[in-house]
Image (cartoon, rainbow, N blue to C red; front, side):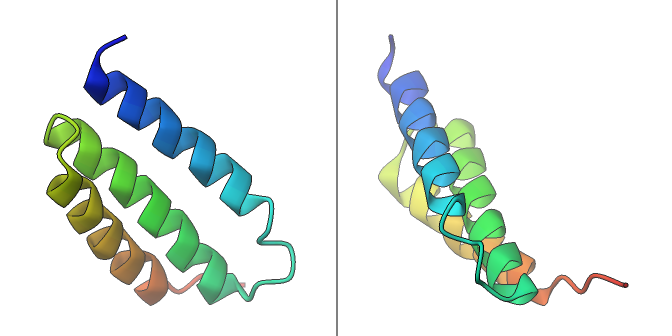
Length: 72
């Protein structure tokens, strides 16, 4: 398995395990965590597994997830 695919698989597994701890989080906190996880995976894929790309994607995704408002 190439390094980029291994990194992406590890990030996806971490995201899934991390989301299991979201049961008592507020909706905004959950959105932030989901955004950060999705951003990290996206940043990793787009930059070929670069650490800086992964971290940058996590930051951007977390900020976007934090600002999302869901209507009830």
